[in-house]
Image 1 (cartoon, rainbow, N blue to C red):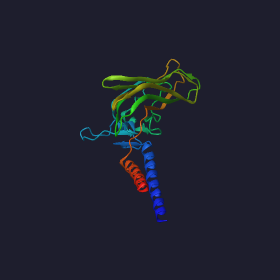
Image 2: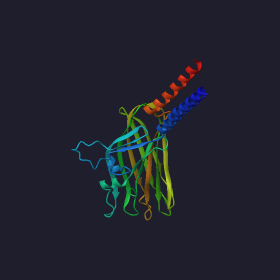
Image 3: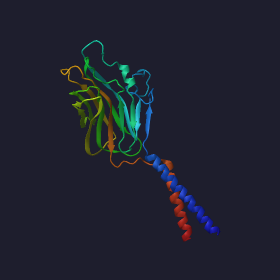
Image 4: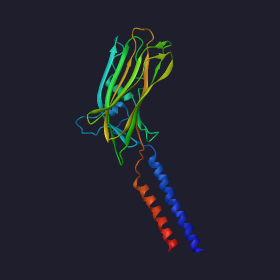
Length: 279
């Protein structure tokens, strides 16, 4: 009877070890987002461009980490706008504070970023016919393991409140470079908006790789709206948001030490039980 109780206790102990290992392993496989250096929650483009940081203070740049990919060193912002009258000036620098950037972590194999334009990027009926801006950032693998990037994609959402078909172009272009060479150059765009008020998908545009293994690369993003001023009267296009994804092939987050400890303990208990039985 005593031996039977001992075996039951041992089985329970092993079950607890293995269950704990599986649960922790599952937690580690779940997606995670980490932000640093941002004055807002979520981070804004203003945070990531470090417009609030004293350049003489040696303050680390703001960044976002999504599932082991670190997005950092945002910069090189150029803004361009074609203005027809006095009442719609170019976007001032503080406008970036109104554009949230959120890490997309719903799929650990397909992390990315979503940029919400928050009503700040649109053309106007009679005044503004072209808006564009570009920026760059770096993507770096952190932690254990090297992911293989199998494809990248960009997409956006735009809307018009015109009742007529709009002949306008909304575009999101993405260029990826590594070691001084272009790896990918894609553009999601839409050239016609058949009446509104309505919301329309822009893209997606995707570039498939023969899986490339590298630990860091640079990304340049160019966003633009260009309507047709010759139509007159009702041109009004707005980019609502856009996303960038970096899909990985067969990447599994490395187990944390706690997971390895529990799994090792469970296997050790099984081995001890077997030795006792054969004893």
